[in-house]
Image (cartoon, rainbow, N blue to C red; front, side, top):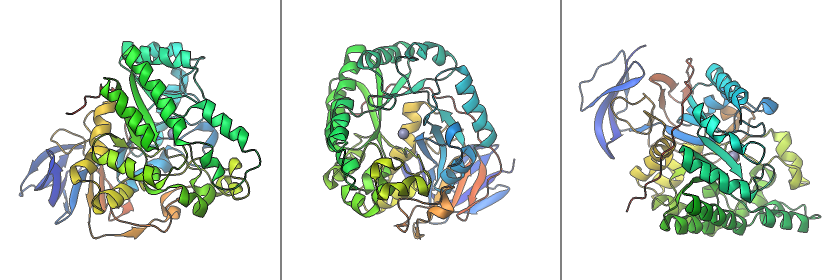
Length: 447
Ligand SMILES: [Zn+2]
């Protein structure tokens, strides 16, 4: 494997930006020093930012029933174009809850994925909750649980799952919306077909109530919980309350909840239908504040594309539209532009929420920072480069909810496991990624 040196960049290492060259040999970072490093291939990063590759712990990319939308190969290409050098595959519809389903997804990923990938189990509920220990022993230690339809786990199972997470050291990932509130509103709105109806039927209170339940169960059992796709300010307050009581509970939010509010639902219609729903402009600000203050640990995509047809059917009836959006290629550019370049996030916070914290919480070894011995997962950003989002170039489904939006933060170069994956904004990677075994660790609150 050819060695690569990234020269003269502003390199983020040890918590600061410093002028340093980085040498990558045999897939790993072997030297970081000021000047004078040589490699088979040199990348001139003069004046540019050299950052650890982004990590996405929540992407639905390869469900056997939906391979017409994309597969590991398409999705990992999208990821690399946007600076994501590792992601964790989340089940979409087909459960990953036994040996054959886990092995099948793993072997598909090894064959097809251009980036290193992990796999979450799920959806845990009454029919499979007693398999946690056995799956742990196989190396599957993170599990998706729904508090609502379509894969709802009963309360009596949710508390047992959290108890099992303590016993086994695994982590439960919650889609947190209260089913009672959701079904009340969807029953109340049978005739509404306006674009706001599908958002108003999933109010912020549904998220807050579900998180309160999970937090309470976590305190009682000592269980380990992670809230996926946090969308509201009151949901964040609930998480903080339980953190204050000593619960091991972390969260991720997604770019869509930091960029869009319900106002955009009127403009973009079914293209921004998602679950949880979009919230108010105030919620958007509270989520940004949560990221900056360290109360929200990370950004994830909840990448779940549908085709244009599956979305556009919702212009006449939004209830029929597919409820998800592609997000792998735009996660980093959006957070970089709207967060860092707009002054909402400092550089250290940007790196923490896009890479470091995910590696720590989910136990992704050798990733999350530019350090000697770590994987050669590095992105190079030219701060002056700006380009409009074009979903046709980025995704197999050919669209993005952010189409036309001008963003910075598109990586000029991406190294993935020490191989050049993006060269001058073009995808060039040949080699495939490795399976990552996740080893979640307890969240330690910094005072
Ligand atoms: Zn999801």
